[in-house]
Image 1 (cartoon, rainbow, N blue to C red):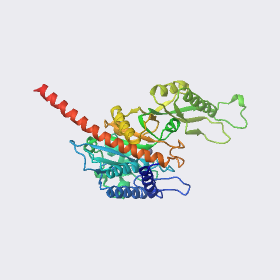
Image 2 (image 1 turned 90 degrees about the vertical axis):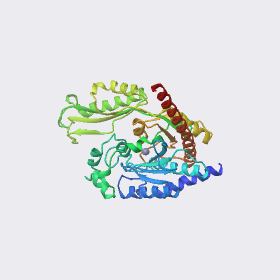
Image 3 (image 1 turned 135 degrees about the horizontal axis):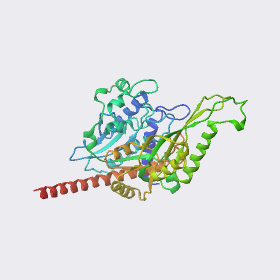
Image 4 (image 1 turned 180 degrees about the vertical axis):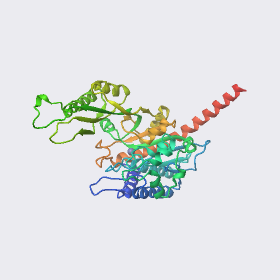
Length: 424
Ligand SMILES: [Zn+2]
């Protein structure tokens, strides 16, 4: 191992250790929810770390923190941004979110130490409430920032204790009157790269420490209701029953078999049983159904297979394909910096990066191998040697994207000039 790799491992480990006590339960999992004491400690930590690197720290109108290296972005000088989130699910892991923030800070420091002077401002972002654990909407900060979730709707959301976001913001010294979309900021993000610990096993199976994302899988939720007839558990003969739970069990097995056949991921995670008595035959079972797959065809195939159960759609999120030109630029820069080719992998998990991409910002994602493949549990893991390679890949990508933005801008200026001539 080279000295610089060891130094990077130490940087990543030290930063993760600094925030490790925040929101950690004695059982081992981390619970860090938006606009709480834990969140404030993490935001203050990030602000202090940014200032140590000489970055200019801003908070946007949606509560996301942006630390700029090389000044704030402008329409003439758009920014190259990177970062992730610091909040977690209840009892989450150490890497989901923080690895992207820590890697972004470490990558900026690595470039600064190497004497790199980017042509565009480099921004490190901490998105607010990515997991949606407190107010029930994932990617809260990026959705409000881009306007895909209105401030009005966001501010009236309540947490489990009945506190509105508006009240929670006020308690943290943020004026809800100013809360909302920030189109001026979004318009000066030239390109965004989010590094994240992988939430599956694709990189492990490929024996690759770092990969680049192709897309976020399409994802839908449905509900199935199975009717039966309530009766006495002791006096109703087995051959004269209409048992909703037995039929619901057939649904669960059909979902599993179909998902296996079509290479999809399908889950029945919640059952509501009526009347829900130990000595009563169930009269009705309501089952949730979550289906995701690399392509929409596979999702539709699963739905076709269980059509007899008449699933009712609750939500649908189409697949998000990340900018393919940017992906090539990121992969090139990362390969140059790490000496390794990055495999292209998809993901079944949502990210702020997807929200930005859907809003028209060119986005790319880097994934760092997860040794256990587990996610949203303290069992998730990333080896420090892989994390160090992730930082190198990200630093290389930032440099190549900085260069790429210059050529894109030059092309645009030229195209405008040509258009001007033809118009004239
Ligand atoms: Zn995450």
